[in-house]
Image: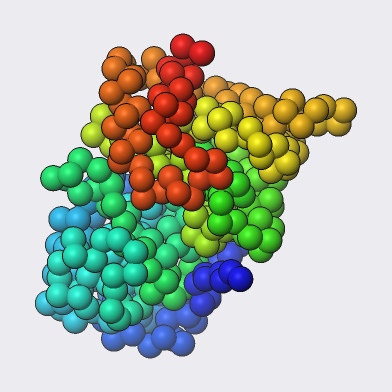
Length: 383
C-alpha cells in the first residue's frame, strides 16, 4: 500500500502565470502576504506577479526574506506578521528559501508562533493558512512537498516539519519566471532536481507511481539541464527543467530521499550551499548504492541518456554515476571535497553519519559509519 500527495491545483507551462487571477478568484482571499526574496524583487518578478493578480493585488502585502538558507527565526518572524495582520493566504515566490518560509509561516502562525516544537514528522494538529507556491527556479521542488526545511542555528544542522498538511493548495509553475536565472544558479538548482529524481527513484520507499515521475524527470534533466545552463533563453529547455523539477518533487516527497541528502546535512556549518553539498556526494553515494541494486541504477543511466546496450549490470550502473559526475564537471561544479578546502575527512564523515539518521533509513542500502567514511574518502579523491 502507498499514498501519493500533491498540490490540489498544479498549473504548469509557459504562460501559467496568466491563470493566477482566476485561481485567486476561486479562493477569494481577503488579505494576501507575498513572501519573496530581494533578488526576485530586484529583477522585477514581484511586479509581474502583482500585475497577474489583477484586482487582488490591492489586497496584498510583501514580506522580504533576506536568507539564502532559511532558519527557524525568519519563519517565526514571518509567522508573527501573519498573526498580527490576519492574512488568510500566503504566496511563496522565488526559490526554495522564500517558499519554505511561506509554507513554514502558514503553519507556525496557527500553532502559537513557535516553530521548534513542530520540527519532526506529523507534529501538526491542524492545517495551516492556505498557500500558493510560485517557483522562479527549477530545482528546489518546494512547491510540491510536504516539508519545510530550515537551519536550526543552535544545533548547527537542518531540520524539517514533515506533514501532509504542509502541501501547498496551489503550485503555479511558469518557466518564463526562470529565464533570468544565471548559468550558475541554473546549474545548482538543476542539480537539486537531479538528486531528487535519483534518490526518489532509488529510495527504499519508492513505489510504481513515484518511479513513473522520477523516470520522466531523469529523462528531462538528461536532455535539458545542460542546454538550459548554456543558453538561458532556450525556452524548450527551461520548460523541460521546470516540469522535471516539479514532478521530481512530487515523487521524492512521497518516496523519500536517501544518503546523498542525509550525509550532505553536515556541510551546512561549513559554508556550503545546499547544491554544493549535494554535488560533492551525489556520484559517490550512487557508486556505493548501486551494489545489489543494479537494475534501478541501470534505469537511471538509461533515463539520463547513457548507452547501456551490451553492458553488464555493474557497468551499466557505473554509467549512471559517471553521467552525474560528468554533468557536474561540464557545469563547473566540482564533485571533489579537496576542491572545497575540506581536510579532516574522517571527523566530517562520522559527524555526517550521526547527523543524517533522520534520512538514512530511506536509503536503498544500509549505511554504517565505515560506509560513510568510505564515501567521503571517494568524494575527497582518495579512492
